[in-house]
Amino acid sequence: MSGYGFSLAGQALVALPSGALHWPAQGLLCVSDLHFGKSDRLARRGGALLPPYETRATLARLDADLEATAARQVICLGDSFDDLDAADRLEDSDALWLTRLMAGRDWTWIAGNHDPGPLALGGSLRAEVRLQTLTFRHIADLGTTGEVSGHYHPKARLAGQARPCFLLDDTRLILPAYGAYTGGLRSDDAVLTTLMGPKALAVLTGRRALALPMPR
Image 1 (cartoon, one colour):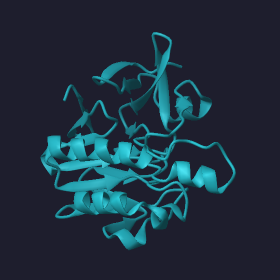
Image 2 (tube, one colour):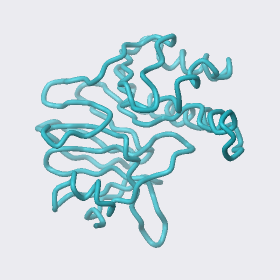
Image 3 (cartoon, rainbow, N blue to C red):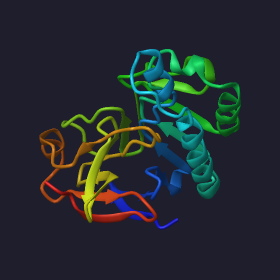
Image 4 (cartoon, helix red, strand yellow):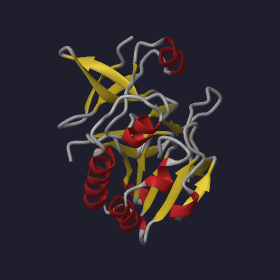
């Protein structure tokens, strides 16, 4: 899968080219900021009219990652749906697809700032999850070591092209947005340079996961 392997808080992890995080020893796949239903939310609120295919594109990528990793556990790090109504407005075929992916897996929704969690879809809803030495939450907290979070949709430029990326240092990992219609925050933004240590890496997504010094 051309992922980038690394260690955080003593745990061996893999940043996948898709933007998902794999923890092989736990059989766990972690994704962040799926933002299902974004095109629907924009249409409802008078925003840009986008082709309503982002949920299916995101589900297809998630399906492929689950198949490739054989993950038994899934953690979605928040903002899985673009607003409070999006979970209830899923197309029936998309809801069935998501239900199939959840079946037989330990599935956890972390509450985000866009959505409190899709209560009707099953799985467990948590503010954060701690597994061994790692803490999974939506928004990074400077006081935590071994933290895995999302929220900021980090991006970095390579050869003039902005690509979603993981940000990694000695204490934390920030995941890119996994959803198909998500913007991003440049890695040199003051919010991210404050959170990440001076030797942080940006692990770019794409055909393969590519690590480089975090652009500042």
